[in-house]
Structure formats: structure tokens, C-alpha cells
Image 1: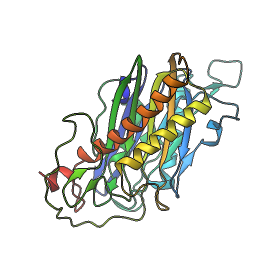
Image 2: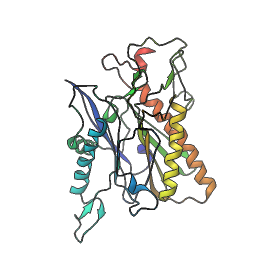
Image 3: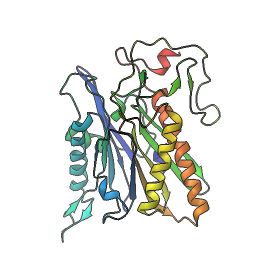
Length: 313
């Protein structure tokens, strides 16, 4: 999982039931992590992405906030900033240790109105997700930013995966809420092959579904590595992860999706040259594709939005 990249922690906070079906996921990053981003969908909802451009001043990121709630859900990042600021974590702007501005890029997905209108993540969701953050196994499925997610005709959710590339680790987390389908609805087979035995074989029978795909969506996520990359190289890592999304979801990057992927390089291990760098990019695509598939595989049914496991039990 993404937490196999040393120093990376993940926390979720969500509400499901009683008129709620939404949440927030936070990826907390070790000091000195360099960031990048690639937004490829036609309807992104983002915050603090311009600062990640290679030509701009700030290169480090302290956390990434992924949230439901469409543009309203960007408020969750305020809570992440408050949590980090209370701990003196951020870009220093004054003489005192607490004179910092936490750098928290964020992206949101459209899950309105999965519950009642007005029930959406706010700053308290972001703060609570930070409080819950751990470097242990990532809880997947209908949790955090994936609580109200859908992928095509099925329930979506949070997925994570990782891989070793020589001495490096590459990990990804995705909140899967795409317009396209993650499986072939005529057979139940995932578009992604994955590692041997990672995903179930295609049941070979068509889906019996009650929910129609939505035209308002977005898949968002983070790909992280312990390699030492600059901002331009992180941008390329995020671009590679978007290729993985295109392998996992058909169609992807539509006009109605706001597909956005952040990249984070913790800088522990130097990269010796372009061959190692290209291997990292190749892995980012594969790992993000697997994370997307896991988001659908581990989701649970909410109302008439059925999960993969319920449709093809």
C-alpha cells in the first residue's frame, strides 16, 4: 500500500447513514517531500496546484487532502492546515517556530447528493482524518473520500497498492469515482490484470444493475515514492499515474471527470540516471491502475448503488 513508502501516513474520516455518504482522506508526508500534480479530466476541483508547477517557489508539500463534496469539500483542507499548523509543520514565514504556512494541495470528487443536500465535508473532516492517520495498512473501500464514490454503474471507493522497483518503493492511493467502468459489465472481469491472484477471475456473466452511470464524477489520488525527485520529475510521475488510470477505467479523463493525481517524492534514495527514473514512471502507471481496481473491489453497497462483490458474489 502507499504507506509502504517510509514516512507516509494515511487517515480517513467519513459519515455514512442518517442522510450522509461522504468523507475525506488525508495523506501526511514526511518533512522535505517534493510534490507534483497532473490534472487531466475536464472538470477538476482543486486547491494549491499552481504552486506545484516547476517554475514556482515552493517545492515541498506537507500533506495532500482528497475529499468528497465537490467544490464544497475543498474546505476539508482548512482542517488539515489547522492540524499541521498546531504542530509547527509548514513553510516557514517568520522568526518563530510556529510561523508557518502548511502546504496542503487538495482535490475533490463529485458525490452530491449521495446523502442529503448540504451534508458535505468541512474543515472538521480534514482535521479528524489527520487525527486518524497511520503508517499501517490502508483501510480500503467505502471509507474516507471514497464513502460516497461510484465508478460507472458500481459503488466506488478508496484503493491502494504498491510495488518495489529495485531499491525504490512506489505506492498509490486512489479515490475511485469515475464516469467510466472499472470492469467489463458483460463478464465481471477487471480491465487491470494485476499481480498473480490479486484480482478475481472474470465470473463470465453479465451484471444485473439498478443504478445508471453518473455524468458528474472524478477520480483523484496520490502516487508516492522514496526516490529523490525534483518538481519536474514529480510532475512526470503524476502523468505516468494518469496513464494507469486510463488502463483501469474505460472511458477515462472525460469532459465530466476532474481526474487529478498528485505525486510525492520523499527524497530518501537518489536516482542514478534516466533508466532508473523511467522504471519509476513505468511502475507509477501500474501501481495506480491496481489502486483504482482495489477501490472498486473493496467497496460496499450503499442503497441502490451496488458493489462489485454484491453483483458478482
